[in-house]
Amino acid sequence: MTSSLQQSLPRSIPQLLFNASVQHAGRTAIEEHGQCIDYSELPRLALGVTRSLMAQGIGKGDRVAIWAPNGRDWIIAALGIHCAGAVMVPINTRMKGPEAADILLRSGSRLLFVQPSFLGTDYLALLAPYRPASLKCLVLLGETTAASSAGLDWDGFVAIGAATSESAALLRAASVNSDDLSDLLFTSGTTGKPKGVMSAHGQTIRAYSEYVSVIGLQAGDRYLVINPFFHAFGYKAGWLTCLLAGATILPHPVFDAEAVFQRIAAERITVLPGPPTLYLSMLAHPKLAETDLSSLRIAVTGAATVPPILIERMRSELGFAVVTTAYGLTECGGLATICDPADSATIIASTSGRAIPGTEVSIRDPQNRALPAGSTGEICLRGFHVMQGYFEDPQATAETIDSEGWLHTGDIGQQDAAGNLRITDRLKDMFIVGGFNCYPAEIEAGLMEHPGIAQVAVIGIPDARMGEVGCACVVLRHGVQLDEAGLIQWAREHMANYKVPRVVRFHDALPVNASNKVAKNELRAGFM
Image (cartoon, rainbow, N blue to C red; front, side, top):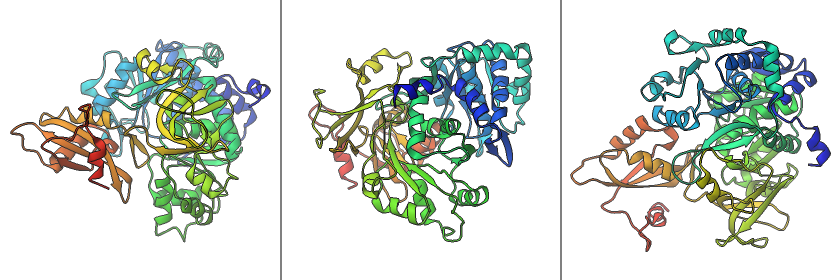
C-alpha cells in the first residue's frame, strides 16, 4: 500500500466508525432477527457504551472482556470499548469456568460483557466459583432473565452513562491513536497456557484494508459472519472488515448447514467466509440442489489443506464468483498472505497466496538463516502487523520475535518463485478440529489435572468427518481404573468441547526419544 493510501486510512477503530457513519449513512450496518441498524446510528450506540464504561471508571488501556456468541450487542459493546480507548479481550464461548477466569485474571479485565446462557450453557454459573476479584462488574447481554444481583442488564448498564457527557465520550474516542492497543486475543501459541496477543488499532485497519481490496468487498454486500467474533477471522476479517467497506453485518451464532441455507436464500447473503469444513458440509447437504444460492459472491477459506476439487465445486455448485485462501495467525493480526481470486484453482487450493503489502515472508533454517525459493523451513513473518508482543510476558515475546523483528510462526512451509506460500506442516503438534486450533500442550496440561493420570500425550489423528480429532495416549497411575468413556466425560466437564479428545488409548509407558521426550511420531504411526 502506498504511503498516500496509508495516510488516508482511519488512524483508529473509533475514527473508522465515525467515517463509516457518514460515508455509508442510509445503509444497514447490522441486521439481526429482522432488525436493522443504520451506519448513521452506530456512533450513538457505541458512545452509549463508552459513556457507561467511563462512568464505571474504565480508562484508556484498561481491559474489558466479552464472553458471548456472535450478535449485534457484541459488536456494539466492542465498538464502545474501542471508543473508550480500552483494550477488548474476547473470550472463547466454548471455554469452561476455570479457563475463562484464568484469562480474566491474567488480563486484569475489570468488566465483562457476558450472555448468561447459550446453547444450554449457563455462563454465569460456570464463572461464579472462579470469578477473580479483579473483575468488578458483569454486564448481561441478550435476553436476560438472570437475577439482577448477577450483574447489570443492558438497559441498566447504558443508564449509568448519563453520568458522563457525550462530549466527554467523543473526546475520549478522538484521543485513540493508531499505536494504542485495541485488543488482546488469547492464543496458546505452541506451548502452555493461552497468551494475550497485543495488537494496535492502526495495524488492524491497514491489514484489513488490504483484505477488502483483494476480495473485492463492496458497500451493500451482505456478510453472514459465522466465524466466531472471539477469533480474528470473525472479528477482524468479519464485522470490522464490513465497516471498512460499508457492507452489512449479519451475525450468525453457530453453524448449521440447513439454517445457513435458509438465511442465504431468505436474506440474500453475498459473502460467506469459513473453514473448508463449512463448505464441505454445505456441498454434502441434501437440500443443496433445491436451495437458491444465487446471491453468493465471495468465499474466503484457509486453516487446512484444501483439495482443488473443493475450489471448483465452490465455484460451480455453490456459485461463488470469488474464492480465495489466506494465511495468518493471531500473532500477526490473523492475516499475512492471501491468494488473488484470479489465481488458478490449483494455486488457491495448494497455497496461501502472496504476502500482503508491507509484509515480508522468509523461510528459515534452524539456525535462523534465510533459505532460497523452493526450500522447506520455518515460516517467518516481518511487517507492520506483527504483534506488539505477548501481554506481560517478555520472555515468550523474545522467544517468538527475534532481534531482527522476524515472527517465528512454528509453521513449516516453502515459497515458490512467484512468492506463493505453501504450508507443508502444522504449527508444531497443533491439529485442527472443525476449524478450531487445538494445541496438545494445553490439552495435556488440562488432562493432567485428572487424579488418575500419570502421563499423557495428545496427538491429532485422521477423522473422516472432522478431518482431524484429538487422541489422548494415557498412562494411568498405579492401581487406578479408568476407561475411555469415563475420561472423555471428565474432559467434557473441564475443557472446551473442541479440545476434548475423541479417542483415548491406554499405554503401560509412552515411547520416548534419545532426549527422553515423548516420541509423538511413533504414537501417530499407529493411526496411519
